[in-house]
Structure formats: structure tokens, C-alpha cells
Figure (cartoon, helix red, strand yellow):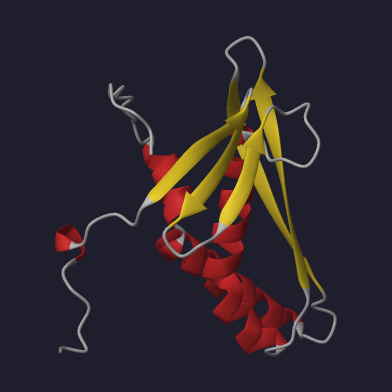
Length: 150
């Protein structure tokens, strides 16, 4: 067995799906056993699809920058990552989203802070698949299949 990862073009996408659990209610799942409750934005205890998109961008950005922040702040640094949007109500879409990574940088010199943030931004630009996908304006396709659900 090789230690080298296979060519990404030859690797199938990991299984992701959502199962209907009620009226406008779904459970999103992946093959690793994770679950997320999805539903209407007015329902309690669920994420709306728009919220999932936003949290995906926030988490992807944070995960991409994490090693750069840990290098500058220490492995046990604390952070909260927020995300907000500017929604075009007439077109029912987001015009833009803003991710804010909040962490204590008080112990860094201005030079160290600047260098760490520059490197974190570069890491996000290179590694955040969600942000890169949004920036590229990825299209999507919907397919309906006629068969009994399992």
C-alpha cells in the first residue's frame, strides 16, 4: 500500500445525503456518521440551508488558518468565528458574506501580528475550498430520479 494520496481526479466525492424526516425537515449525513438537522429558518433546533452555507464558509476559513494562528498564538489559542451576510431579499440570495475570526492577539508585537495575519489570509485563500468555490461562482445541477428511497 502506498503512502501517497491517490490523484484527486481519480478519487470519488465522499458520500453526502439528506433524508427527509418531516415537512420541510431533513437530516444531512455523511459516510463518517456525522449528522446535521436541516429545516426551515423559522424552525427551532435546525440549521437552514443558508445558515449551513455561511457556517461552512466560516469553519472552512478558520480551519484553513488554524495552523498559522496556532503557530503565532500557541496550540491552545481560543477563537470564535462569526459570519454575517448581506442578503438581496428581492432575488432571495446572498450578495456577500463576512467571516470574522475573533482571538486574543494582545501578546504579539505589531510585526508578529501583521506577519501572522498575512500568512493566515494566504492560507485561507489557498486552502478554503468553500471560499474558493464561492469566489469562482460554481454552478450546480439538479437531477430528479424516479425510484423508491431506501
